[in-house]
Amino acid sequence: MSAYPEFTPENVRAFIADSLPGDLEIEPVEIDDEHSVGRVLVDRRHLHPGGFVHGGAWTALGDTVAAWVTIRNLPAGATFTTVELKLNVFGPGLLGDEIVATAKPLHVGRSTIVVEVRIERIREGAEPKLAANLIVTQFVIPPRES
Image 1 (cartoon, rainbow, N blue to C red):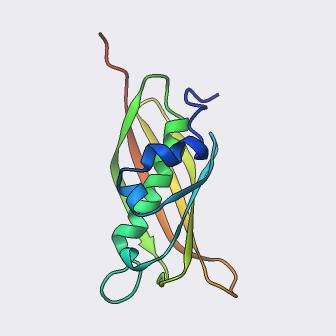
Image 2: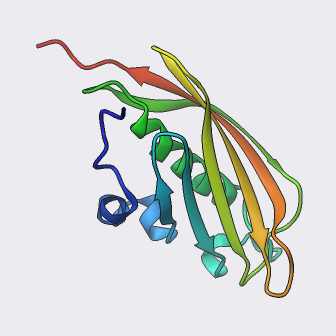
């Protein structure tokens, strides 16, 4: 059972509003203890000058969605920070694509949480296609003792 069951898509929208995920319009779709899902509709701000989704945009989406499922798996009072991530992009994202990230914990330990994020690209008239994979290691920071 999550120590943070109130961390749901409805209240995450307000939580991220004035931050990088909010500025990139990363939309929370599903959040529970087993997985989280977020999406972005690709516009110009997500592209590098060559016209493809920027590596930083893939990473921001994946790291954000990994954070949501991490929060649902933290002990009460704990927080976290990303200590390592590895991104592989398998195909380009283009203007107008929808990219959907699904994060699932691979390991939930006392000091680390490791999350895999699979990112699919959805184009109009085409089947969803795996476009990127991200592995994120989170360092669990225990509550401060007073």
